Image (cartoon, rainbow, N blue to C red; front, side, top):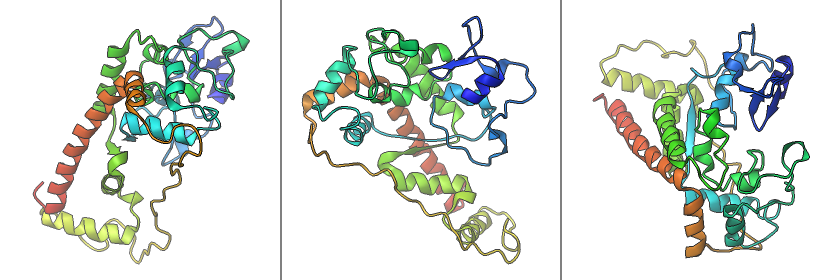
Length: 296
């Protein structure tokens, strides 16, 4: 985003672009010849960890999008354990959550100063303050397409919470091609590989399975079905778990009722997203079953 901002003679603060008059704008609305400053349009697959509103910036608005949603309590607990020392200095989780909720939290690696060295506004966290914002309905925040809502998403006074939850759920339902669930990760991966066969663990095995399924559905299938004659997939695409959680060596070892209450308070919009994701996931599974059974 920094490279693109330089190309546009603009600045980018907290993932939002500003012109010389300090007015925010979306680069996708600017008439320039090429947004491909980082060669993003040449990639077949992109992994981009940012709010959905930034997707248009690089011309990815119409691409197939995939996301995996996690239960808010489990996600907050995982974030706490993963960043226990780097973010939370081994403090009890409920103590961290109380400070986040009252707007006074400051991590060791994120001072109380905001952009430009100014004292940050109480109750409002910078989107780049990951130690705090990862605990504030962050999944819903990342599903926002509106810059206006994104800019108030990390205000723990929650001035526009219903609008944020509604837009996040709407985008989840309407914008994404495939939605997975962390607590059903293997089913999620299997389904994603069905929707995107090029991600299959072995292309030859996948081609054979798809050929059989299409025949059940009355389609005519010839040869190796979409693979070049004689092609053998010797590399494969195994599913690897590289972000395993850590058992806490200090701080909170087990969540109590108060801790869970505080998580729910800070992530209410994420629960709305999670419920919508579960609903969509079950529908996806039903459609896939019909496809494999030949009854679609």
